[in-house]
Length: 252
Image (cartoon, rainbow, N blue to C red; front, side, top):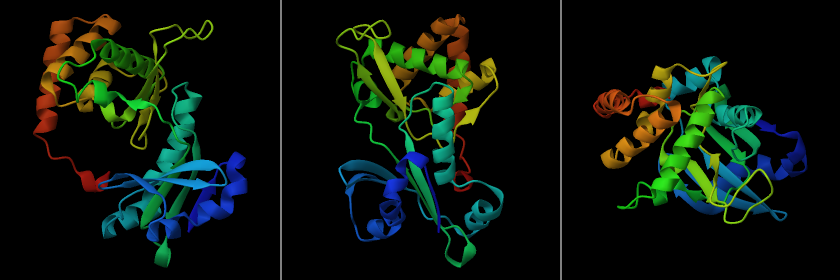
């Protein structure tokens, strides 16, 4: 098994190396369980968020063993890159790769906990969605793009936020929002601002709810100084193509 641990967490190395066994024993609080599974584990007073990625198939075993970094490795490395570029994300702790018979099978990513609220709860899940929050989400997205960050799964569940209710010095004013991005392992990075087409395409996963999608696109266009109507037409065409295209998800 390969196990990479950030320097400041080396004192927890023994516990971290036991994570695959602890998962198998059902340890930890299940936070999310679909294709991948996320659990909250505690050790020596510290909380560890552990994401176990779905077991790969035979073709993926070869790809991830010899040709491509695993999702767990990318999650760890991309968390470092997000922070280096000034985009907050939970601090990476470790990643593990199980390799029975010399071939990769299951990966684990370990990070710190963030208890902020999912933006999806106040946007996608509300009939009368929070328009102020929606604009703030797009402001944050524009800032990510300006920093050369194209989040690989830019949906509202992956925006965690808090609203500042009291002034906190000169950098945070009451009524403003702060964001933390999660699930970053499929992201891409550019040296400068991505092209307009790349930025617009990056928004195609933001939501499938049409009224909300149109509002968010209009906000993004306004923040970029683009024509709202022509931007919306392009964005809706991209969304239509995306919704009717079968992605090669086995290769991701």
